[in-house]
Amino acid sequence: METIKIETPMIQLDQFLKWASILQSGGEIRFLLDEDKILVNGILCKAKRKKLYPGDTVEIKDVGTYLIKGE
Picture: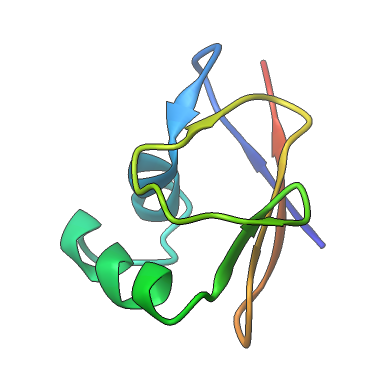
């Protein structure tokens, strides 16, 4: 599991994936969501603007798992 630090109290999923250099652009997230590849805290996520907070985990199937850490 990789830890990704954010500098804000909350970050949206699409912004997080760009911040962590997992995706090049926010538009690419649609493919991952459509193929049911993203889990947030172990629950399938279908919302590209899902709010993420420190302590949350994001798992992308066939890519990796990421823990969000705050300041």
